[in-house]
Amino acid sequence: MKLRYLLKNIKASKVYGDNDIDISGIAYDSRIVEKDNLFVCISGFKTDGHKYIKNAIEKGARAIVIEKDIDDIAGDICENNIAIIKVCDSRDALSKLSVNFYNDPSREIKVIGITGTNGKTSITYLIRSIFKANNKRTSLIGTMKNIILDEEYKTSNTTPESLELQYLFSEMVKKDIDICSMEVSSHSLDLKRVEDVKFNIGVFTNLTADHLDFHEDMESYKKAKEKLFYKTSDVNIINVDDKYGKKIYDKIKKLKTSVLSYGINSNCDIYAEDIDMHATYSKFRVVTPKYSGDIEINIPGLFSIYNILATIAVCYSMGYGYEDIAKNIKNIKPIRGRFEPVENDKGINVIVDYAHTPDALENVLNTVNQFAKGKVITVFGCGGDRDATKRPLMGKVAYDLSDHCIITNDNPRSEDPEIIVKDILQGIGPDQKKYNIIIDRREAIKEAIKKAKTNDIVLIAGKGHETYQIIDDKIYDFDDRKVAMEVLTDD
Ligand SMILES: CC(=O)N[C@H]1[C@@H](OP(=O)(O)OP(=O)(O)OC[C@H]2O[C@@H](n3ccc(=O)[nH]c3=O)[C@H](O)[C@@H]2O)O[C@H](CO)[C@@H](O)[C@@H]1O[C@H](C)C(=O)N[C@@H](C)C(=O)N[C@H](CCC(=O)O)C(=O)O
Ligand SMILES: Nc1ncnc2c1ncn2[C@@H]1O[C@H](COP(=O)(O)OP(=O)(O)OP(=O)(O)O)[C@@H](O)[C@H]1O
Ligand SMILES: N[C@H](CCC[C@H](N)C(=O)O)C(=O)O
Ligand SMILES: [Mg+2]
Image (cartoon, rainbow, N blue to C red; front, side, top):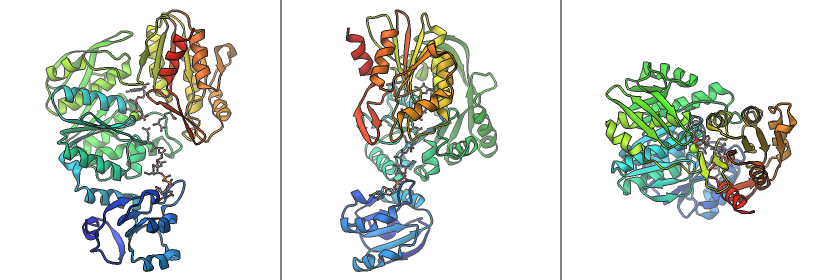
């Protein structure tokens, strides 16, 4: 593509060199630049893309987008006849360049963006299941993987960088996709990964303590999430039982005509009543402005009812009737690593769950306690290089709502596991018999299962679907479900 086409809508303060050259692709990492690529320099949190211009040129970059002065390498640029484009914001430019390169593919798909601290992955899967069952061509973008029809694409972030995102949308267009359900993280909203995505529907689940290493405080975290709702073209769907949800709803309602509230409260547009919860399933009556009817889901917990309500609201807003929704909800398969039971013949209820925030852990433990016939043993830790303020809060929740907890490693990453445990201990109560520390996660799971008697519940929280553990900069194979299964069959 000609550089001048690629530069459409880019606010460049200066363009040096020939903009009639052909560009073969875009890269924002010098290590993967190819011949005739345009290299976008991002000033990052760990390093600065501007430092790698020389490497990018050596690999064949033909044009460079910068947001800082680079006088020190002017010689290399002249010598290699490189075009230079100076912009104010490289992440914003990357998003627009990617849209131009892939011909703005998201406008051809119904994109449903889901944001909030907890429930995003769950809702994307629920939405996909219902639309699939209604013969729609679906795709999904999120934490575990990206999926187009049934083809899976690996991912490293919940919401990919704009370049990968626009590539995925272009693949969706090629495969004639109708609907994409997509997780929209607060990082992606602040770092402009989704700046130019054409969202049709926005969903807000909830906002509780997380990511306060990245966002200054809860107010900035909320502001990041809120950005999604200004971007949507059709409808916004907001959980108003959540206090931040209510604030966002009140604000957005004044600006946009189509906003639907949901919750467990008859003042909402879409709400649940006559709730009847059991250990492995729940029943309730859903009420919408046009119809109401009974719903049965085979995922337990009040939080799952909220996720289903969000899903129903999305389907409702797209014109689906009660029958299209209800008959398919009943057959929804449990989602990987979300309240996932580990089968065994020992009579112990072993559950693997991705609760990695205080609120998620509280919700899951409340659900577990509601139906517990025996003791509740919780195995958990907290991720390293992530929000440290949630550690004592998770410690308190686990201590208060379990009969026993075992504090262990999650993904310590570059942090010392002992320091993470120390932070968790700040929230742990005084009864030393109620907890122990076993840093090695395999040993912790082993101990919890050894301790459990018939009817007891072992909740293994924090890593859900993950099949790895990150210790220092090494990634090891580790899967809570497999480890639990091995321990359960190892006599
Ligand atoms: C905090 C954060 O979001 N960081 C993201 C950010 O990285 P960064 O700004 O630190 O980048 P950097 O490492 O300083 O590098 C700066 C630039 O130099 C380039 N570079 C670097 C080295 C080199 O040799 N050559 C080179 O060109 C890099 O490619 C980059 O463009 O931009 C990168 C490129 O898009 C992301 O991969 C990276 O995500 C990291 C891996 C990450 O861990 N992010 C997490 C916190 C995250 O985004 N999580 C959210 C929320 C999850 C949820 O709760 O659901 C998510 O969406 O996943
Ligand atoms: N609506 C909800 N409210 C509170 N907790 C929830 C809700 N839905 C799920 N959870 C809990 O949060 C955990 C993570 O759920 P899920 O993966 O759907 O969230 P997410 O928003 O995608 O998280 P992430 O930020 O890691 O992408 C679940 O394993 C469960 O413990
Ligand atoms: N999306 C979350 C996932 C946390 C999962 C937990 N296992 C950890 O590694 O901290 C994050 O990036 O903060
Ligand atoms: Mg997720």
